[in-house]
Image (tube, rainbow, N blue to C red; front, side):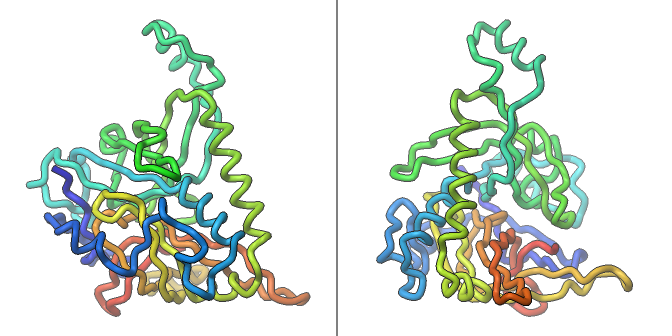
Length: 308
């Protein structure tokens, strides 16, 4: 049985108030919510009227392919109280979301040699390392990473295209201690080229999106996740930046994103797509800005992202 991370009681503003509760939610209450759109059924006409553009649709499709389901089994003995989980769930699965940040060839020759000794005839060039941005509330440390499975899905069906296992976690340079990079290593012919091609297409499509849509995405966001660990869904809503009130005096201002997008257990770690107006002297210049959903701010009631 899957036990999904309930993000309702999270706070990304006050570290001392961070708490995750696990429950047995009713999947149908979430998946039938009219605010969700199934990504495998996505077309231009399913987008809100003000976002109906073919290039923006293709952009969402590329982002969707790079958004993975994360399944974690077990709880590390090293979790502090600020990252506490109900240990009664034991080794039962909890589900969240992550987004691919980087893909590279794996330089671990020893791993390739072990595969050869096991009788698996593979090309060393097919060994890969994936860096996946997600919430540290979902995957706290290396012990949990070793019991984590990551699934990437085809666009037109719900059959996993690739299923790989976690190996480690590392800090995310542009985040706080509530985020992490889940490191996965494995072997899959053609995977590196496929994922890099999708990343390149995503960046190319960013320049093709009309500025009027980018402007709207400076105060609205699209969130892609796996509610209750089921099929991939998209939801859209209003958002605004808010300064982090935990910053020390003299530090550069840090911010989180407050939003009103529909989320459910399984949405923890989901990417939120926005655009930032750089406002240079030559006019508005919008740049893609990705945030990571963490939960709800107990002070304001708004849902929040990580701090950066």
